Length: 137
Image (cartoon, rainbow, N blue to C red; front, side):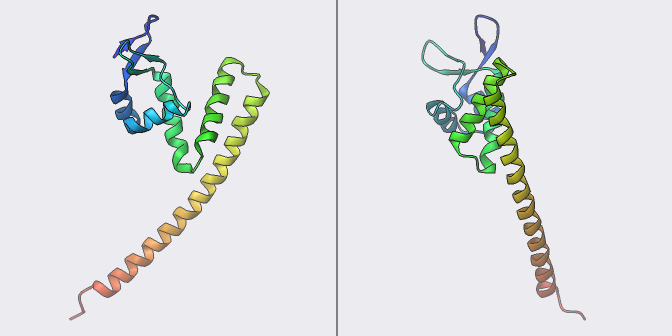
């Protein structure tokens, strides 16, 4: 781990990949797409990340399984950045609110699908028990 001139610790891409459970390839892709860029580069051109960068990547990782497209993730990340700079930014607040509403809807659907999956697992268990149990003596 290195640090920026202000003492902010920096992590290499491998450590960030391990901490976020994202592949190095995904981290590079997110950088290329402008979704989550590292805070610094080493003199040799290696990506160096801060703790704030890791938090942003974890947010992206959490959005991905909910089906958010990369552009929506980028829009959300930019809105969060804007609100850190200016908490009264109404446009950024509107983006965050719309993502909150979308997330609630996606979560509702996932819970419904999970309930169906649990019901199906019970059916499979019942069938398995009925037809694979040894015959009664």
